[in-house]
Image (cartoon, rainbow, N blue to C red; front, side, top):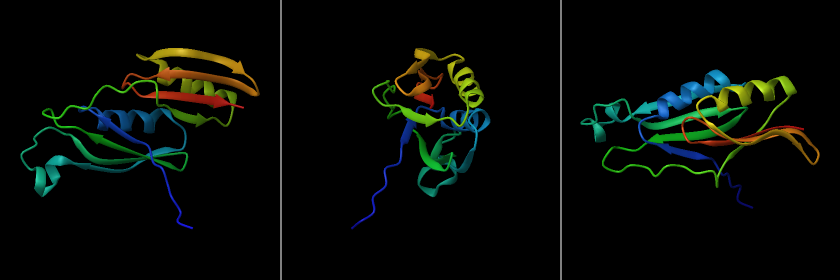
Length: 136
């Protein structure tokens, strides 16, 4: 049997470095593991801006990839039909994550209890990325 893996890949318009740095600061057990820029690649030396060609963020052991699109090929704005589901280890952790992601973002739901989940929320953050933090 072939082992398959699905990895979220977030495409932004010039905000990947800022987003990755922000997530590494506000999400527990999160760190930037790789950040390569267009300008450092021989194929893209004409790109002067600090655009991320390949970024990798480790969020609680799971990888999330990032890429900035160049201005001539803009990425469409993300929408909440896709989201990142984030399991929190405690109510305090949930509250901290909710507070950080909701600043300059849009809270679509919660925080509230749903079924067996003690707290959950649905937030589109300031980068347009939608998160579902939960505390069971």
